[in-house]
Image 1 (tube, rainbow, N blue to C red):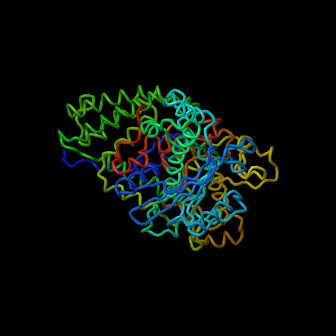
Image 2: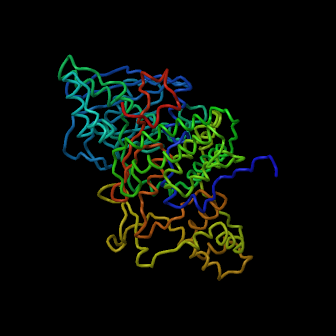
Image 3: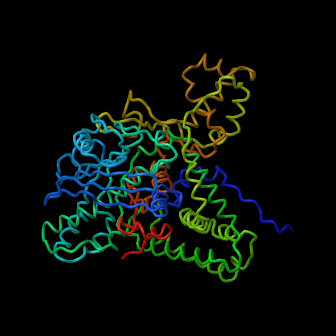
Length: 564
């Protein structure tokens, strides 16, 4: 028997790309919010509050200056006293408690005033030069006022009241990459401090969270000059609230190359972690046990009620069982009495099938924390050309082989009866946001969905009428309506993680599973709570160090925070 450890490969798309498994993927060091904090902490970023001109009702302007390793950025926040008319987290809202912008360079007065005038117009507005992100947020109706009142009375807010919400303000929009005239992401360049996808949006979210703390302290002092400031431990434990809906399903469908790159980078990192073989006394084993301890406490203290996903108490119980196996591995080098050439892979195998998919994925995300910091450079590979270019010179025989091979899953996927494949995806004219529902309720609308199973089956039937040496260009000349489907399938045939193996047209499809993939795995949100199968609420940066703690914060130690 060879002493060489077996090679570990990324996971089979047949198991990973099922919607229910994608939904189970957890935040990791490769999620955008966590990787941004790693950059901020390891490269010595600092954030200072340069201007805070707010009245006693909280109306006014605040300016934050961000000193990065590659230049200065500025965040401008325009705060308003809450109005309860047209107040909604949706894009059609007309009343926000705060709107703001992330700018390159120093926030000069001209750009501040231009942003103040343009941002409230939203669709009719245009961003000032050098604008990276426009944002909007509202105060929590439950937690914000309670916190201000408590601080004004000289005491800290009740943790039970904060626990049920988890934030003081909630993000209601992060617009970037050319939207409203913001700078397009691909123009940033590799030397830009926010050159990794979604770091600009996550930095804006981090600064909105900082503003929520400063606003609370300010309003408490306005009520009572002797008010106490919000405890730093409470600040750390609070995140920025976030709500996401059906638009993220269309995002995943519309950005298949980015999805493939994100998942393949993550899977490559996980494969490296699975292949680690630390020595008997290596601290990595103790580190894993400590991470599991934190995960158990975090899940035990999770007050959210979940409908689609398992609750915190169940996950905590399963994680305790995983911890017992990790302790055995640490202390004796075995898992259930057996030794393994790849100890962490042996641990994963012992856990697989005995716990929920979420617990399996929590373990995987913790294993990635054992990787050397150099692997964080993998995240820089997320910049990807998203163009889908077809190959008209391909023969019908070659394309037919692709449909039967790479896309064989689409031919094999069990589909509902035709009457149940009647879900339509459209953009609401009244609400300016994606919607979904039975086709008969929305006749004549433009369908935004991607029917991969339907495309593959339809094209397979169509190609059968042509000889195998016929060029695809000839087929498309006869059937120009099939060009988009053909080019998409041709361009993605070498990217196995690009397309979730789902049927968007099925009325039984659960959108929140795909929304959670984007929110949890890609962006790094925690406590992602499902609502009506189509909306997800969660927390960004819960546990993250505040701006005053950036110089001493631990890149590996802030997430999964225990309650103060």
